Every structure is written in C-alpha cells, then in structure tokens.
Length: 96
Image (cartoon, rainbow, N blue to C red; front, side, top):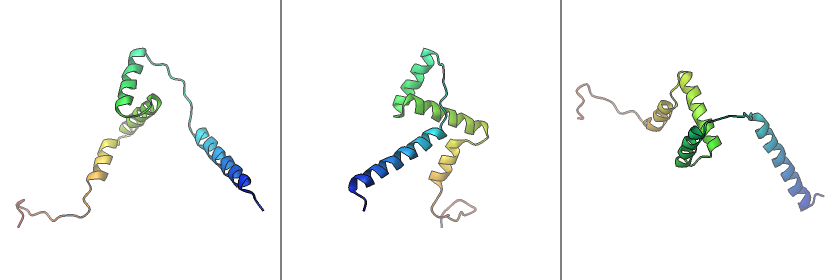
C-alpha cells in the first residue's frame, strides 16, 4: 500500500522531470546589448507586462515570422475578426 508521502514524493519527482524536459528544449544564448537598447527594451517590456527576456524572445519571434513572409498581426486579426457566420452581400451595398 502506498502512503500519502509516497504519492506526494512521486508527484514532485514527475513535476521535476517535466520541468527539466521543458528547460532542455530551450536554448540559453548569451547576448550583449548596449545600455541604451537594454533600457528601451526594459521599458517596453514593462509596458507589455513581460520580463526583458520574454520581450526579447517575443520580438525575435515577430521578426522571424515577418521575415518568413507571415505577418503575425494579420494572422491574429484574421482569427479575431472572423465572423461566426457569413452575411450575404448585395451588389448595391444596401440592405433590403
């Protein structure tokens, strides 16, 4: 029979293993920035409620997507503005 402590310990070990797997999927990259650039990114990150690291990652993702020919803002707009149903359009633009 397993005790409550064994179950808690087992769950903790599983969580630790999952965290290690997630951490191993990410790459640590040393980055040197000028003080002025860092300050600008830090201010921007604060406005967006992100850490400086998360802001840099966000900006890099946006740049890569744009370079690959996908405008992430357009994808978001298309998803959020997609109508739940299609309205028929009249040729004259006037509703009947």
